[in-house]
Picture (cartoon, rainbow, N blue to C red):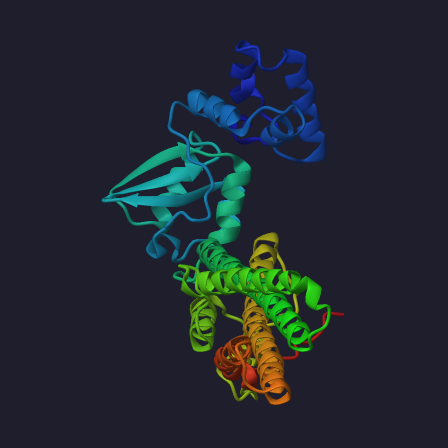
Length: 402
């Protein structure tokens, strides 16, 4: 049947009439499609740069019916897919896409072909059928996507759902990166605080040792500069502590990371997954071990399943990156805590040493500032660090791809 031949040019003469394509070009494209055994529409779209929507509109006008495009998110009712023969659909190029009450909408490469309606009535129970034209390549994708899985486990829908979870994990990793940036700012503020307290300690020592007494004003200037740096550092640190992006606690980080990996329960249908019991003691380590069971070896066929298997793999890798990002954030908290502890121990020791060496005097006020600031930094650092201590020996070891 000429109207159903892959190289038929009649539907596309509208493009010539509108000046989008020369008659000679259409003739050469028709010959190329016949010689290469591919659809003429593919030649027009890929080699003559005719937009897909323009080609589809030309088909719609030629067949005097609406058009429909391939969309893997299309919620095709499972009852329309039950009992369909993919081989027959591929030969006659039609596919049921929508049920609207008692009407079933059929996407067809040639809506005028009599076998389309006869086969639709054979496979589908409906009072009315509405035919819409679609690109042949789109119909092939419908068949590959929706007929290589059981009804209710549609491949196109699975890919869309997994893409949603990849976006969810990406949003969370971005949030974790923001938290790490905040903690880096906090460590920078602590560095300012250390410089300030260091200036105070040096000038305090020089004033008490009565060296270069003629430039006592310079020592007081150093103390003033030190106090300014210390206040600036404390302000920057407390600003991070109290900001709306305040780094969450250790357990909050782990719980939200766990929530972003729940796609494994609903979408991941890999045979034998979850057969190993997690060996980690902490929740985050168990999540890492859990992901290792979902690393797949790909033997994909056909192209539709290949894309779906690759989506599975991308989601598992995204899950591993999310767990790794959570570990990095937890260790950023630990580094911030250790920075606080290190600074606190240094300045508390220095303040106590100055008190012991020089005794009590007016300048003991500055020694007390060092001791109190150091003690507060130690306490705050312990609060940052201790919750992350158990994670240090629990980092999961993922298999390395060969």
